[in-house]
Length: 223
Image (cartoon, rainbow, N blue to C red; front, top):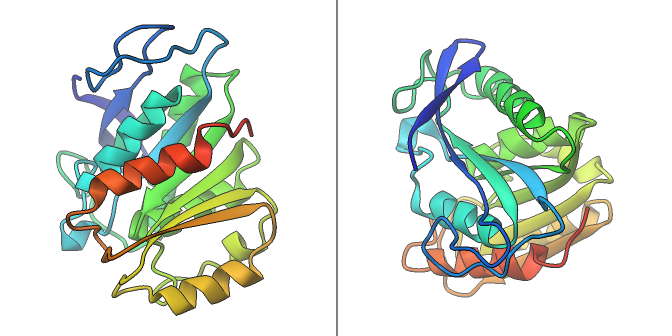
């Protein structure tokens, strides 16, 4: 799909928009789609891992998550935070990236004004997406892939009563499974957690299982 740019607070943000196939059509990954004749499932903004450690909208697990969301009928916007890829600006370790995410939500809300909105991300991007999404009344559902719970404050996410879906690697070196289980136990309902056996923080060799988990968690979700 063609690259596009969306307006951001520090200048243009490089982005990709995946749209689902019409009923019975061919999806963006070339697979036959079951079709979504009843309308768009959700408009999703998906954020990437930490820019200074090589995270971009092309990170493998982010790519796989976007394709999985497309297969269940979502329109998905991936974008590069400020300072990543061709996006303008410089990395700020949180505040600026949250502003970027809000701009991406604005774009998707304008594109699909009648659709439910979901906020998701991986690693650093999960902190940004879930924190902003917990606070934005337009967002109904939060999706966190490998959230770095020991590094950033997920307090607003823990307290949010919005639906929360988490995907975690069994051997995540940045967020030990024990810490995820403790966080999950404290988090407000509704919530779901999938643990991918043998996976590290980046899901090396396991990225297809991230896509499977997305579909398992969200295929029948209507929030």
